Image (tube, rainbow, N blue to C red):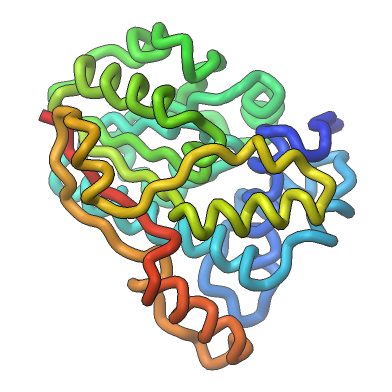
Length: 271
C-alpha cells in the first residue's frame, strides 16, 4: 500500500509512533508485542529512513510506554463499563482497539484522511470500530459519535503539544458539554521538555514553532476552570519496570524525567 505523507507533517508523527511500536515488536526482549502495527509497516510502501535516523532508543521506548499506560487505563475503564464508547482523538495508526476489545465496546478513530483512508485498508474490519475523517476543530465529529449511557472514555496521545492553549480549552469545553460524565487521558510535556522538543526539531530541520503547548502540572490545569476533576496525574515512566536489558542511560533518563515530572499523563473526569 503506497503512502505519501510529507516529512515533518503532523500526520508524519503518527508514522513515528507506528514505527516505534514496530521496532519494539522486533526485539527479542520486547515489552509490547503489537502484531498489527508490525503488519501495517510491512504492508506500507513508505521510506522510513528519516524516522530510523531520528528515533533513538529513549524516544522509541517513550512512545511505546505511552501506549502501555494508555492501554492499562482503557482496560481499567472497560472493567467498570464493558459497553463503553472509546474515542481516540488524533488516532493516527494506533491499534489499541485490538488490544483492549472485549467484543462489546464501540471505538471511534478521529484523524485526517491522509492517515485514516490508508489505515482502514490495512487493519481487520469490525462493525464496532469506526472512523471519523474530520478536522479536530470541526466539532460535528461529536455528533457523529452519538449518545452512550454506558460510559465514554477519550484518549489524546501526543497531539496536544501541536495545539494552542485556547484550542485545547475549546476542545475540552465541547467534550464536557456533549459527554458530561466522560473520562479523558492525555499526555503532555512541561515547558522544559517543550524547549527540548523544539531544539530537536531544529536539529532535524523541522519547524520548532509547530510545538506550541506545555503544561507545568495539575495546578495549572485547575486554573482553566473547566467542568472536570483530575483523577490522576503521573510521570509517564513511573509505572514502568526498569528492565535489566535496557542500557543504564535509559534508566537514568527515565528516573530523571520521573523526578522532574517533565512528561506526564493526566486522567480527568468531566461533570
